[in-house]
Length: 423
Image: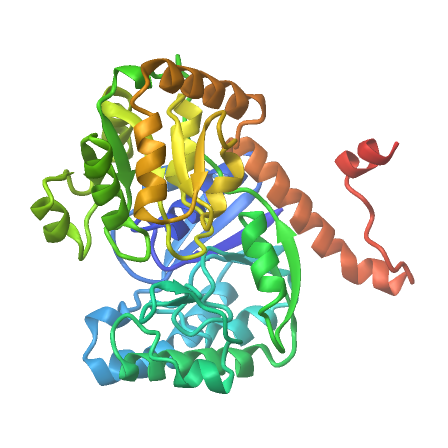
């Protein structure tokens, strides 16, 4: 099978690119031929160095690097992106059997969707956020610090000052959302959700979009080692962008109330605020360095999202190493945390988090949670190989559908795993 994977970068600047790169490598190792198409020039992850991975660079500018007016226009509809993508696909030695889009808001824009939908091959979109339906992309009211409850692109949505930047920026994003609906023209879109919460939310908020929902976990690239000893760690750790919607400020205050140090790995607009509270902020680090620090210093990893986050990957990586997790109920990764067994699942509020952190001052409890987290994770690890198998099963099923319709079959041929479950 030949799969074309589209993302805007070829190295991790966020979770979407990380998953795109790891998916490409996983599919190549599973025997598929992979064409990885990056929109924006930049660093290339060594994972893409594989004989079955062919990489193409469209050479497009990041909209954030452009003058405001041009960036706004390109974000809404980038005709140059569509033309370059069409030429790149036309130039491939063989057409892809499936197209998989991971990210499109920084350069590609909705203009690439007609190109992809017109190729005659199945198109799959992984929903790393809610940009497919929500103008600001995260289904979150930044003006109220709470998840959005109004219908996307309704009158209430258009009137809401919910964008983290400005009303003008919200207007541009509304234009992009409207352009997307024009681009798909009533087509059925196959979307992959990385958590159950994302699927449930999108099923109720997709409006006129015709979505077919699929569920596949993100891959987690962690080698199995001896479990960490979190009871020897001293800090509550947070890994990711330091932003209000991700709840970084909640961790600092809750840790202070609980009498535990707070350790932040990442960067963002809250960095100065966190330092002023006495928190330790290390900045961005390589995955290997993050793993080393967490294993040496983390008593627990916290994912305190205020928005209904579809990840984050750091939760899975912590559990795989035997480190307890404190997760917000709004985080999709909380689905992998057994409350009271491998960590705590709480509301994204300071006192709720502080209560969990206070409990984690007990060395015996932390040791028990950590061991349980490790054992539970490795019973069904989210490996690259498992991720590739799930993707290939979906691609093949979608590719078979036109043939089945021609034969008058209303249901797809079940996968071997599905047949075993029903036997």
